[in-house]
Amino acid sequence: MKDFSKELNFKTSRSSGAGGQNVNKVETSVTVLWFVDGSEFFTGYQKNIIQTKLKNRINAEGYLFLTVSESRTQLMNKNKAIEKIIEIVNKALIVPKKRVATKPSKGQKQKRLDTKKKISEKKENRKFKF
Image (cartoon, rainbow, N blue to C red; front, side, top):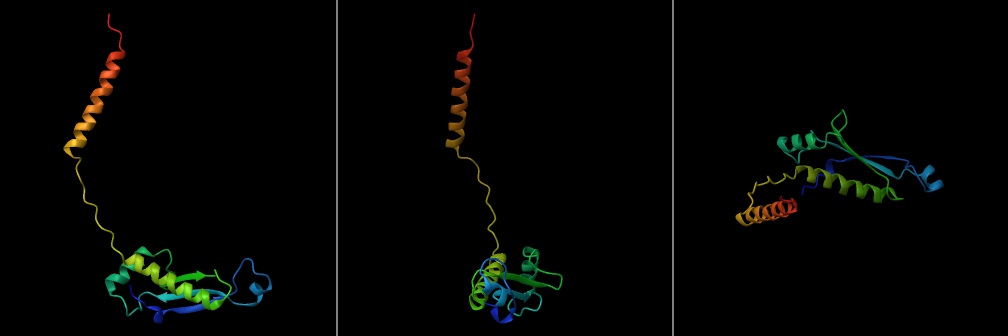
């Protein structure tokens, strides 16, 4: 888990929602910006993966951005934003394991055939023979 928090830039704004007069006066909402191409912590291959997996969160200038306004204080929102952006980037870099195809076992095949046979016999017995 790489910590690239030194490369992050922050913008503050007034957050929306409940909070009374505090919302209208104090800039508590924090937007964190990270320039993906300018990062020195990741290789070109990793940057490419980040850009493809997180293309919805990257703007036209190439900045990955995230806005947090959960808390009433700017400092707590800033800390949450750092945690979230690091978590998002590290999740994007995880390569999923390839699924190994398995075949049904002999027991499973036999059980399936037995149940098919039982159902077919049941239906056969329903027929009225003259």
